[in-house]
Length: 101
Image (cartoon, rainbow, N blue to C red):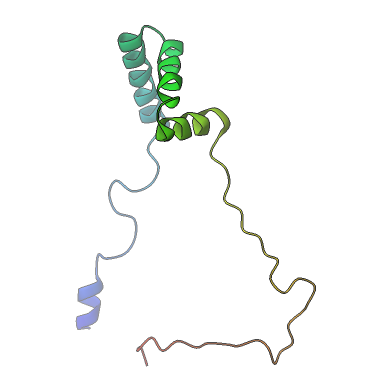
């Protein structure tokens, strides 16, 4: 019974969790575009400034490439034991002791 009181209110979704509403995303997008236009004159001038900075700085270069072409997907090559199926004797099962016994 004492454990139930300790755990009460510890689970479930908390405030501020999850994706922001689309309206809020659009609001931030409009604010960003307005700031770009105010500072650089146009959105195109903003991107040109970014590409000029990319010539001198790898982090800028990497950022501009990711915005232009998208961030590359992480791939994992699974070629270990290629063509060889493990037998039951080769499979090791590990049982971890969680201390909840």
